[in-house]
Image (cartoon, rainbow, N blue to C red; front, side):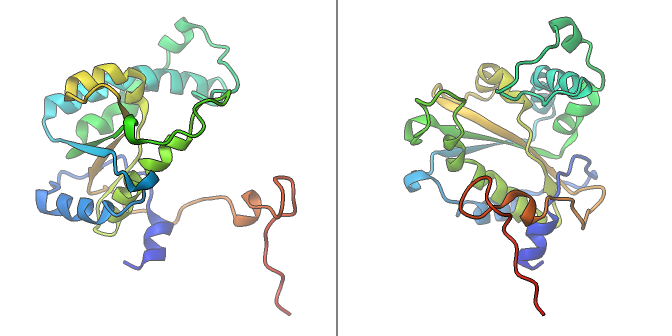
Length: 225
């Protein structure tokens, strides 16, 4: 599969066939993905491979809290888990969210889970003192996670980012014996998708790229005459 096709068709796969993901296939994916960049090339990432059905089920259960709030806020028309606008929902309303089981089911049912973590002691979090949630640290871990998904796509496999388990990070760290000081960045369910999507909907370049300033003119090419 050509590079452009991989990038344009790597979709969020959540339903998988019963086909196994062999160690050989998984090694190929990770051997390609490892060339992702990280701050200072310090490579503080760690991938924990989870195949045990009971551990996968526990990770799915630990994802319920995050999923419950996500679904409740989405149903109420809020932007789930955003750090700018506090939720108006009560704990009771969040607890009553519907569809949580189906939302976390891919974590229990996928052939394999990859738990992506990062050693915060080697990350340059240059935005840590700003009056907002930090995002820069993600630059040292999410390129690797994305490489995993694209490498999987190129081999007929698929997966998606899930982050609901991070709401219960201490319990996830304890379950998987992840050291203190390491952050859980994502859990990637991986398998052979039931359906292979080939067309994705994304904003056009002109909708999110501007010239010279945030409110500058949309970046577009002059028409050819």
